[in-house]
Length: 97
Image (cartoon, rainbow, N blue to C red; front, side, top):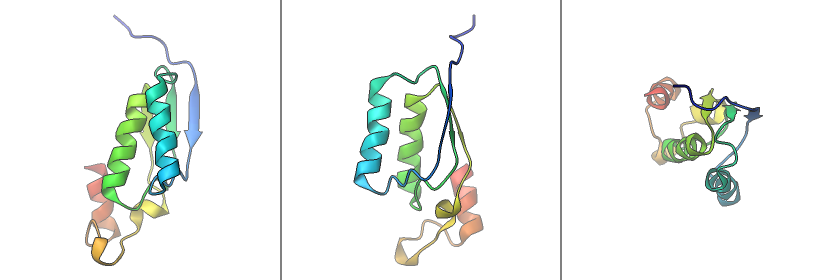
């Protein structure tokens, strides 16, 4: 038994959900249920924080039937004491894990 056919393909980048207003926009997408039969291509620059990236991707996965993600330069950033990983390559491995 097949599910409903996917209707539309959307693309977005530079969501920067570290900013509250941008995260609220993503939450609103998920709550509407309007895009559940659609595909999203998310072309990076979501967040430099792994926890925020994970939360955003979970919301987008709830909002859309399928989500394809490729990291942008912000996902590779490692800064000071708030570093999620030792270096950019370790962080990339954590993102894909």
